[in-house]
Length: 406
Image (cartoon, rainbow, N blue to C red; front, top):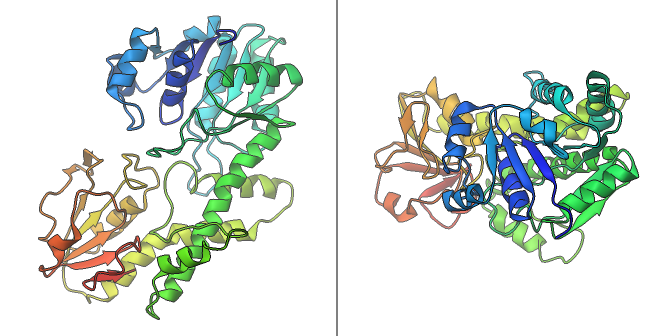
């Protein structure tokens, strides 16, 4: 490999931890900064906090010099500082930049001349040039600094695409910034694509997930049309996918979840409004997908009148095979049911505890089961002879005559 960098990576969640692992394996000196003391303790003892990194992988990297710290002091000697903190939205759908701003101020207090500051946190176009760079320059008094946007492209639980084989976008505020970032990311990424500015990289990331948001909303509407007339929506999608150009397959479901699709489009719409541009299609897709869990609950309960019910929600991770419950449709359905039915429980083999409960074992003792995610750990045949009403949000069990589609 080329030059070995001293790297401080702020945030050790689904984005920062895989990045730390990849960088240490590439021969860099890495300190992962994590302010959540519980997570910090687990990581320091070799216990991974995400499913994409095993305890064995983490322990091996610790033996090879990976360090974790609860403070920012490693930044004083870092050549590269990478920001991987959450960028959520508030209750009004506007960016909540508190974690990012707090991190930037901490970096500004400790950064040394010649350091490259990289933002991997998803945010609006202009975040690097208009927020991160001027804040750090002003507060630190250091001028010999470099700035880059290199948006994360993490898909938790994806066995095919990971941090090393997913193409990496980088856009710097000047050529030197881009060159340093390219040298670093090329040490563990198979393909690095440079763009003309941080704004291009930032907007590309928002477009990626807005594209998914809009198409998921579309396919859910198509599924609402096909089900009443007895057509399998998945068969329709597969049939359309036979066209070798101009179509990409999206599957119906209970909405959208995770740290990207329910959030990133709102950063795009918010930023557009600042320039007097309306994005009604983006906002409508956001609204349709946000309301889908509530619509599913209403549709199911209408079929059962007002009698008290016991309901099991299957799959509360935001996607099948994930322990991440951020913006999870399963969680939203579960919470919606709490005030409407007598008993509501949940099942998901990838979740240890939620809402003070453990994943249920007896799946056939409920009047209603709602399959939100095909999370595994169950057999459809177990319900075939039971009186349980099965409602499938995934569309994968169309062929079972005892399963109802929603």
